[in-house]
Every structure is written in structure tokens, then in C-alpha cells.
Length: 253
Length: 244
Ligand SMILES: Nc1ncnc2c1ncn2[C@@H]1O[C@H](COP(=O)(O)OP(=O)(O)O)[C@@H](O)[C@H]1O
Ligand SMILES: [Mg+2]
Image 1: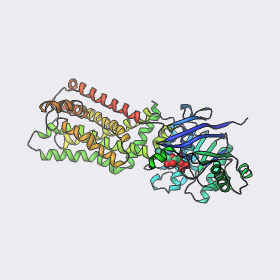
Image 2 (image 1 turned 180 degrees about the vertical axis):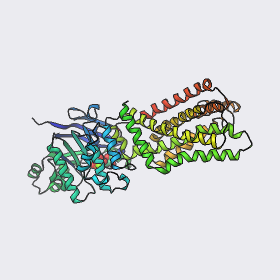
Image 3 (image 1 turned 30 degrees about the vertical axis):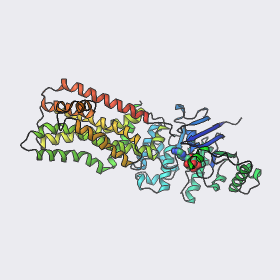
């Protein structure tokens, strides 16, 4: 029997007056790298926030590692990296990581290990404010790795990185998955799909597909993830347009 | 509340302050400059002995309010608060960490400012100097608690800073520094009785003029403690794990 790190059933989320997620069903198997792909504004960050348990106005169920999302018992088991780096810019890399290590009860030596993993050994005494954007986002990633979480939720961690670094991060995600960590990672760049064990395609708050890349290609007859996504978009639109958001029309009037 | 997480948070906040040398210098030097100015301006009059001690309660309130509200606003907008609340850190650890860090800063500031006022400017204090420091620290904690609360209602740093005149200047006008509270129109006297700075200023006045002020101080300090815990309680309601 397949074990799931995340299961969402009938998940809907309102943000302000917008229905951002509508009846999302999702299953993320343990120990895999699952890519959450789709255009900007599609609800990727909102879905990740619901999994971490920091999103308000959530209906439906989200179960994470066998507990309801956001349960106190999950707080050292889930590592979360927000889309923009959420670390202290005025502190050094080392100061940031030692603080986050203390919060999750990690041993001091762990800081060096994660710095090695994200290739920032040389920057340990530099202030985050003095780093490049890509380096700062890796500090943010390291801060989530430090507690050896069972589930890593990474919101667009590879955006703005050069190809070499992107490749090394995807390798890191694969290694983590091989050691039993589940990695849920979002991206709006479709060519990262080939790096993932499974894909969840999200558009306008709905899941278009939740499958492996080969299965998606076979089903749609497309050559790559982007082709498959476009095929599924056309298919969804042919089935009838997405129900308009009533609040949207009210605002426009 | 978890002592390890609370002190780690306090140490982290202090490290941030240490990284910002200019703010640190302003926190310690500005009170001395203002006290020196007041002493110079009021030489040969009893003004300095009356108001000098009372001013020692104003600085920590203003300074800790501004620094805390800007720092915590940064935590809310940069996403670090969201991240912290997804870890085992509890809201009480967060608030306790801030109170501890800025409480320590208030001790340092009070020692420097009191020392300067007494030994450099010649401030005459009848009561024990230690009590001046205690009241100044209580006032600094009040500033921190109000700053934590105010940061929830600001979207930008400009707004956070604007809360300072809005919340602190009325208290300054009505605290008895300019007109003794019992000589105010009845309505204003009543208003000043619900403003916390009045109690800090009152307490400092007692230390300045009474040899054994402990008895009179107790009530003032108790009122300040109620305001501090009340503001921290309200601030904790604004630290939401789940946000829209
Ligand atoms: N705080 C918010 N209040 C109201 N609407 C929001 C808020 N944050 C995001 N949204 C809206 O929710 C939708 C999905 O956003 P998001 O989950 O960030 O998408 P993605 O991460 O895929 O780009 C967007 O239309 C966005 O405008
Ligand atoms: Mg996003």
C-alpha cells in the first residue's frame, strides 16, 4: 500500500474575496519529489501554505504525515521555505542557521552539514543582506533543512538561480527523497518537470493533473510537460469554462 | 513557554541590534544629550531636579516602542514570523524573547542615562538610584509591549513610526511633566489616570523626592505591570499562526 505524506481532499481556500483554491484533491507519496507546477497566480503558494498550516479560511481536509495540517506535532517534522527568503537579513548566515537550529532542537554540528548541502560554507560569516538573491534563498532553504524534516515544502526554491546551481539543488532534492524525505516543490517553469517523480499541475485554483511525467505524456500525446499542460488546459476549457468567480464580477461593476 | 527557545529568541534580537551599531549608539547617546541639554538650560533653577528624573522614564518608552515596532513589523512582512510560527516556537516564546531582549537594552540604557544625569549633570535624587533604574526598565518593557501590539496595525515602517507620536505624545503631555496632574482640569486628570506613562513619571518623581520611596512605588509599579501584561496579551492575539 502506498503511504502518503500529504493528502488533500476537497480543499478550498478563500483569500480576501477570491476563491483561490477550488476542491483540490492531492496525494503526495512518501519519499518522492513532487513538483507543483503551474502559472503564476494559480494558487501554488496558497496550496503550500495550506499544507504547512499557516493559511486561514481553509475548508476540506489536509492531512500531513498522518495528522491534520498545522498540528503541533508536525512542527518539527515539516520544513517550510517561503517564496521570498524568510531569514534575518541583518544577521550572518551562521547566526541565522544557529537560531533556526535551536528552534528545532538540532545539534550545533548540523549547521555545517546543511551549509555544505546548499554550497554556502564560504559565506558563513557574511550578512544575508550582502549576499546575492540566489544565495539568500539558499540560506532560507538551509534553515528548513537544519531540523531534518520528514516533509519539505519548498516554494519556488530554484527561481533566479543559474543552471549549475539549479541542477545541484535538484540533485539535493533527489538525495533527500532517496533518504526518505518527501519533497513538495513548486515552480512556474515547466522544464523542471523532468526532475520530479510526480507532477501536480495547478491552474486557476484547480488541479489539472496529479501523475508521473511519463503517464501524463502518454495520456496527452504531448512531447514535454509544457505540451501536456497546454493540452490539459484546452481539454479543461472545452469541458466548459471555469466557473467565473462571482466576487470578480462584483468588483468589476 | 520554553526557556531555551525564549532565550534563543532574545539572543537573536540582541544580535540584530548589535549588528546595527548606529541604532545602538542612538539608544544610548540620545538620552544623555537630551538630559545634558535640560540640565544646561535649567541651571540655577530647580527645573532639572524635578523633571530630570522623570525624563528617565520617557526615553525607554519612546525608544523601545519605535525599535520594537519596526523590528516586529519586519518579522511580519519578511515572512520570518510565518516561518517561526511553523516551527515549535510558541507565541509566548516569541513575545518573551522580545521582552527579555529589550528589557536588557532598557537596563543598559537606564544605567547609562541615570549615571550621566547624576554624575555628569548633577541630578539630585533623594531615593536610592536603583529604583530609578527599576522604573525605567518597567517603562522600557511597556514601550516594547506597545510596540509589539502596534506593529500589527502598521503595513509599512512609516506607519509604524507614526504610531509613536500618536500613542506616546498624548501620554507625554498628560503625564504631569508639564502641569502637575492634580492641577489639570478634572477630565484631563481622569484621562491621565488611564495612561501608563503617568505612573512611570509619578514613580520617578517619588524616587527623586523621597528618601524611602518603596511604599509609594509599589502601586505605580503594579499599574505598569498590568499595562505591560495587558499589552503583551493583546499582542499575542495579533500573532496568528494562520493568516489570510
Ligand atoms: N493575501 C492575499 N489576499 C488575497 N488574495 C491573495 C493573497 N495572496 C494571494 N492572493 C491571490 O491568490 C491567487 C493565488 O496566489 P498564489 O497562491 O500566490 O499563486 P502562485 O503561488 O501560484 O503564484 C492569486 O490570484 C493572488 O492574487
Ligand atoms: Mg507563489
